[in-house]
Structure formats: structure tokens, C-alpha cells
Image 1 (spheres, rainbow, N blue to C red):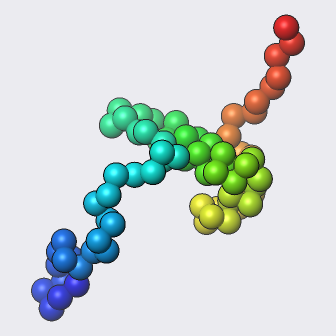
Image 2 (image 1 turned 180 degrees about the vertical axis):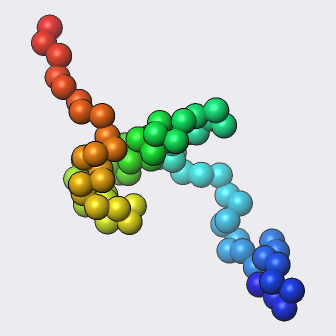
Length: 77
């Protein structure tokens, strides 16, 4: 940032405008906040191989992960 308080392109890291990685969830502009939250948590859990230590990476508690994610009940075939 410079004296006028405006962040310009040259102030950002070189890779700031690179394409997002494949694990980033795709978010439609019409998505509900709950859906976006669940999608981001699911992507982070996948990145951390299902370990709730993903909470630390997200800056949230493990209880928040349990509360925000829908319960996955296995179905019998």
C-alpha cells in the first residue's frame, strides 16, 4: 500500500492472479452461505484426508466443522 491507502496490482504477489488450484471449490454467485461454507470445509477436509486438523487450517474449531457439515449416514444396499 502507498501513502493514499490504495492497494494496487504491483503491491500484490506475482502469483496472486494465477488460476486457483484444483482443490478450490467452485462457488456460484447464487450459492447460499451455508452451501459455500460446507463446500469450503469439505474441500479442506479432503485436502487433510478427512482429518479434523483441517479446522486449524481454516481458523475454526473442530466443533464448528462438526456443526457445519451435514451428517453423512451410510446407506445400505
